[in-house]
Image (cartoon, rainbow, N blue to C red):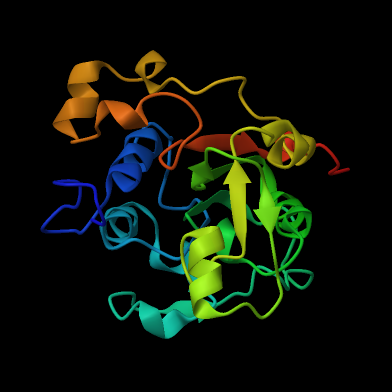
Length: 219
């Protein structure tokens, strides 16, 4: 996958970040009656969650539902237009490498996603951290310029490691550091083909597991 060798599963097409996310999700006491919102679903995670959650409670969504032909009923949800979504609705909200695509103030999206959680609900997400500082741009940049500045033509922001406290850290109660070996043994991680480069620090595989109250400004 890109320049990373031997990271994508040949069966479910999962990447290392997807498998790490699943290790954490397996520890959740998910029951068939729990309500789940899965944004931009990954094939492997979708197949696994669909076996655990009742069909009517597993809401799968994206801004472009047609991109997910393997999903029986993928609905359209725009993460820059969430006011109409119900509050305290979901036991789990899940997405990976999605927030860098959303063309609106990131505080808006995170506020509403946490508003949509039940009091005991969890928000699991992954974003691609980069070595520098936070940057975003919603202007009509050329394909080449957006790739050069943000790494991909449909990205609108970079989540910089140098100033986490000035962007995500202003909105969310984040962990002080990342070290997945506190949660899993090296043997478990290697068995899931999660390389050591994903075990520590804020990087593109770092899994956040937050509750409703971890949004600092949510009443």
